[in-house]
Image (cartoon, each protein chain N blue to C red):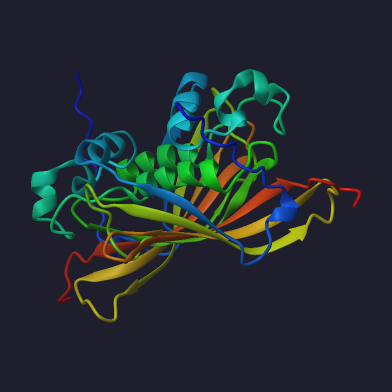
Length: 157
Length: 157
């Protein structure tokens, strides 16, 4: 069995505007969509395939929060480093321009938009990034602009 | 046993700017925080109480997406009606100004900010709302501005 190589640790200095990370892909099954929605977003077009077929989307679709959460996992694995991450201050915008349906193949890509050092805390900086989720038809199903706090590798440089 | 009264159905016409809905409260246990984060946001300050104690928040905190998803359930139960909801176009802003810790009591309140009819589709309108989550110390732990599409009760009025 081959060990996967350790992923490089990204610190603030590595989040250079324009830098992109391909974060892999995920898929949500009908059963997963229903289970998440029954717990967190119990609207009929997320929980009931029969009602959803007659609903506004002509079939079952994933909760936007399910898509967001599943995307987050890939960002944690490919774009955020546990050694440097100080959490997120928030999100500037989320859009869900197309619905996510069971079995869609959803690719995640993150791009650094802006990085600046904190004025008040010299050990960290603020990174704004755009994460985009694209389905197998090349349609963007989600865009999110996130604001993360990230430790510097070398605050004294 | 007394049946709870059926909740009134809100259509577009009911989302009057300034109108507020008290959506009740929720709480996330340490086990729930860890289970959600292991699946969707596996950063040590969400998944590992020991590492979290030495981490940036001095203890385990909930993933912002967990707080968001749990808040959503209360919005679905108290602010959104399945008869009129046509889903969300997106979110204009999320902020997590304070961390959520295991066992916090988190109250959810939604306020209508703006409501306008769709230019292209006469059967619906666009509602912008602010949802705020407040902990037992009166601190706001989350604010989100959401954009929902909502059916009119009477499009011909």
